[in-house]
Image 1 (tube, one colour):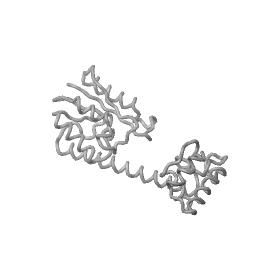
Image 2: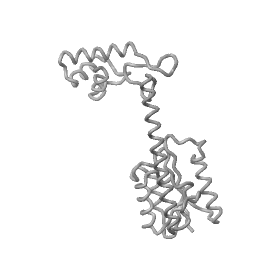
Image 3: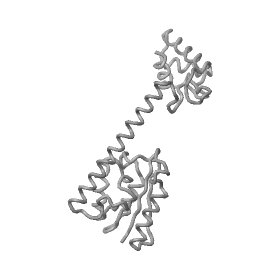
Image 4: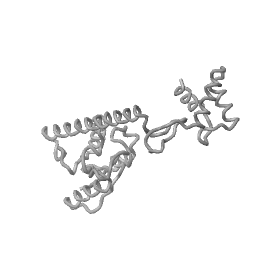
Length: 224
């Protein structure tokens, strides 16, 4: 029996969760040992969400590409293949076309294709998508709360800086002067393109970077 392993962690996946790359690889190794398979390849997608389209996940495409008739694509858990039912269905179909099958070390209805097993797989997929949506909703809510409290959320906007507590944002005096300068030029009737040209010519830069149409436009919107 030919075994092809596949492992994946998303950008926010913590190794401590038990689904880190090493933990998944160990689960696949245990499966291989149980079935007396000494040699196999493991393909991986690191830092990629399970909701991404297949063309953005080279690891799973490579894994499917090397499958042969009767081979087994082994994952530690089914949600490592993906958390979107449509993506999972596409993977399953691609594996079937290779006359191979998918096995989750955790079981999850992948032992065979009887009606109960298929139902189990669909339930696992549905709960996986639900979990992804819940995590996304919680993340958005947390970010929204941070913004309302004027706390840092990712990139610090031009014109602001971290306060001494390292959490809240406060105005950056020099950058605020630059923003007021751009606002003044806009009020005089200059186009965004003209403002970009004038700021760069005078070497009034955006944190050591030159201004462009998009960055000036964003800055002016925040000032509106």
